[in-house]
Length: 347
Ligand SMILES: *Cc1c(COP(=O)(O)O)cnc(C)c1O
Image (tube, rainbow, N blue to C red):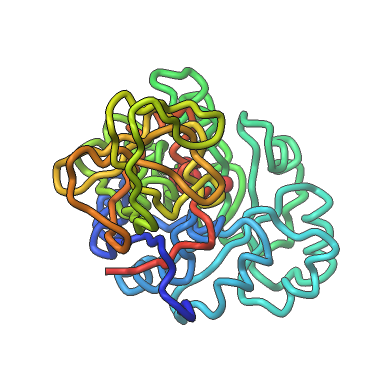
């Protein structure tokens, strides 16, 4: 809870979150978990867990033990996996936690075997991304003997690239691994991987982006609903005479007497400078274009003849695919950039 009502807020749609999760489960041909790293992609990990666990989601994924601690106690039936595994410095926290590490290197496998071989763990195998994970040879070398592997996983490098040949290569490598390495479950697909078809689903999928309204591939259009709406309060309305400029760098010049609203939102809130010249606020179906640059904590919009004043709220255009296309940023950056100054209001 905020101690006061901040002048910017995210309106978050619980029903859309749950509906997205259900669609991903149906589409993926396997139960969907939920990647909740980076504070639930900026929306609030605890609130996301509460809603998805209620709906029946049983598997959650964070990146680090700090994130695991921040999520707090999960509902009893749910489990949490820590995607970056266990460094030596993480072991005390890991051993005191119910969460499973996702072991990503031979060194981590040895560390977990020495400390807690009876405790379930997950294992990441690299099938072509060359980011985190054991090599296929390491995984098949007997290194994992004596571990209780809950979920064996791999991660797709190009699932959101249409027609990329690496997807089928990784799928074939992973299917072969399933025959060679014993685990309770096998998991390959993220949001975009789910869109590639049910043969990518195995026993469990790990969507993140699409839960939160991101559209990873065209197959998700019309099925995945937006979850977050950005709203900011007008702090001041000013009349700018023709010929005057607005904001840093004086990049906007009023070509007529112009009413400008100053809104409490800026790049420190993940409303990036790339929105300059492209972004807009909205009231009803009226579009109020941004005027000039994005400041750290403020933007200006051209009110036209809209009758608005200080204390009124405006919705900010933040449709993820459109905003990504306009700014050249990814939908992931646009979501995870949403900072700590918003009041997050779940409906
Ligand atoms: C972040 C992450 C996911 C979720 O990916 P999205 O593209 O957001 O669906 C799944 N698996 C792993 C290993 C990840 O790091």
